[in-house]
Amino acid sequence: MFFKWQILPKLLVLIFLGSSGLPLMAAEKISSSAVDQGLVFALQATLTYHPAIKGKQAELDAQSYTVDSAKAGRYPTLSLQANNLNDELNQGSVRLQQPLWTFGKINNAIQRAEANYTAEQWALLQVQRQLIEQTAVTYARVQGIKAREQVADENVTQHEQLFQRIQRRQKGLLDTEADVMLARSRLVQARVQRQNIRGELLVALSELQSLTQIFVAADSPVDEQLAELPTVQKVELLALDNSADLQLKRERLKVAELAIKQEKSALKPNLYLQVDHDVGDSQINTQRTRYGINFVANYEGLGFTGRGQVKIAVARSNAARYDVDATLNDVKQRVSMLMLNRKVQQDSLVSQREVVDSIGETLASFMRQYQSGRKTWVEVLNTQRELTQQRLQLSQIHNDWLILSLRVATLIGNLDQQTDRQAL
Image (cartoon, rainbow, N blue to C red; front, side, top):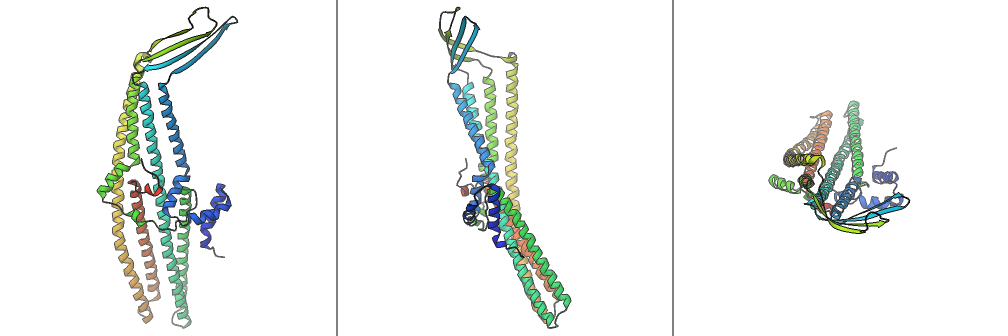
């Protein structure tokens, strides 16, 4: 009983729906909408359903609350106190402290919280870019495997035709049984090769589904415009301007510099407007409400603890600055390597096409010479196998070139527009 590969997309959909708990009645809807959408749909699905995006968004929301909390430092502080010293005396007090001058403590805390929020925005974009690249690369890899599967299908068809021809010649006593056995052996090898490629396709589709969280058949080809890139110099400039990693490191450097200001301001006193109001029984003080200016200074460890914290913040700032420089170098190096490898694959495509065309002409010539008895059946089969290998290699080179192009396109932010999500 042979497996019908045509039912594979719907079968995978049902498997996913069963494992994820989604209603099975949605299978036909997903299979009909997802199958035909292509790379853009896959990218949007990843950014919509992937748990890493949701987790990072939750961290961003948490940081926004930190900003609100820091701004609340400008409001008064209300404190309540009550005690029962004995059965005859109950005392309590209400204190209200309004900051008048904190020597930058509150503003520095707000600025640092806002900088951390911006850093989390870049961190979210960093995760999005990583998933965009992984999805685009996986989608392109599926496309490449399907292209090699087509080559394998054509190879099987060609071997079937050659096998039928040699069978007819053997019945006419023009060829031997050994030739028939050789043709059958090569046909089996061609089918096994196709089966292995189909196995790779199943794995790649599974990897794509783990990113998109829904089934995407990846039938539509990648838009060739996405693989069109400017010059190396222009790509490097765009990468430096749009790199989420680099912008994240720069924002963390800003956070580290603000931490220095915050630690320095912590060494300075605070000035409050303080209002106290006593409630309950009082045998000591008849004045219920008191107010005035409160000057508070706290120097833990005679101030040496605070100075140590400043030095720690300075050291962390230096580390963050070196991290920015290292990331800057990494972005330039990655652009250079990707563009260089892309150029190598592009040049290889031209040469490989010439090889495939040459072997194709040789195979046609060998078939004619075989009919006239000047070439053997082994030479024909060997040439057919060589042609298939070279066509597979041509398909792989083109796919490698496409993957490199999509990696660069992600790095410079070109794929962000495909997801309807604007970069920072």
